[in-house]
Length: 497
Image (cartoon, rainbow, N blue to C red; front, side):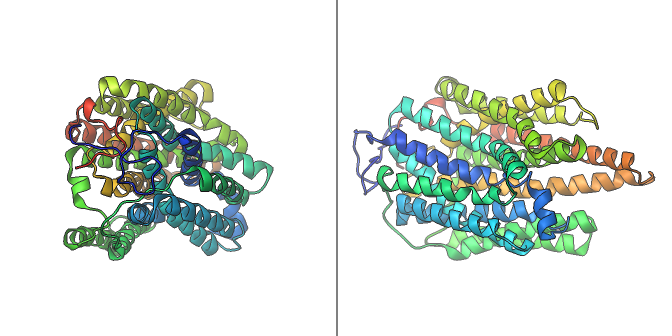
């Protein structure tokens, strides 16, 4: 784009320009990729371990979802603050602190003796992940300045963002079956130690200059609003949508989120400068990301329960059965990086949403004895391909026309939308699932056959709603995104306003 500049990939001052690429950028990319994988897979690695963790710690059925949502809510709710901290405090420094805190929180969760202790550890993981993830993506934008290399780097990042959740399911199965569910958390400690050791010498520092104050009130209000919404969805599963508690928490969540917008409009140092999301292309990308996240997290959650509870797969078998999604993501991500400069981001994202929605609709055809090879395998591959074609363009669209000063906030917003969507989607789809199971059993004998049939019916309903969310993501892309293919930021590290 005319009037743009690139930030120095290795200079301590991110505002300095240079044409020389960082000599160790590919090794640094490997370190950043490991950190991203650890953060993304930790949203789902405990899914397969949940049954055993629930028994060991005495967690009730109503509360077990907080093992997932405590992480994703803290992660998504604080990512915006994490992005601003990374910009002004230093992206490498923030990366190292986030990685260290993530490892310590993982240790706390692995040693948990009560459900409350595990929930708290998961929330701490999410909070430190909110420092780690935006710092990693912002570092990526200043390391790669050449067009072809930048496309490859984003392909790696996009593949991990799309497939990390499925990898978490597989790793969770291996650790749960052959070690202990606690290792689903403890495994982060050696991984983080290795990443920190390499990052100290390989990853360059960069930072923005200007106003270094942080919008803490905004961070508190937006996180409280999201928690209130999720809790309201949870109460709907227990008491119904018309219950006073349900309506009260949902209304409180909406009010708090509206208050967050007011705070950002009036703040001299906003957590989320509204100019970032009011841009038509970025706003459309963030909305699509939220809706894709809502459908994606729900798909993985209910697939693992279907594999283990209905099909009676062992934890490792359930993990292996989830691998086709990852394969599809990797295939599509590689193709997307090659196609995006030719066809642009929008056609890839719309096509990806269509593929993912069709795959979810196929999953609504499951039964108590569905064949893995004839239905579950192809549906998961197509789902993964749809996600791969979506996530690679999303990573680039998040930075279209973003000033260097806002790079951390823009990348954090992309991560936040995926996690917030996942949190809200998990709670919402679980409510639809619970209601569908209860409705199915009305007037039927409470025997084992009907119980299993009710579970399958609930999964079908959840997959159907997941497909609807992904269709909405495709429509948002089709209507809102108007960016030209030549405007996608593959040649410059950061676009200046």
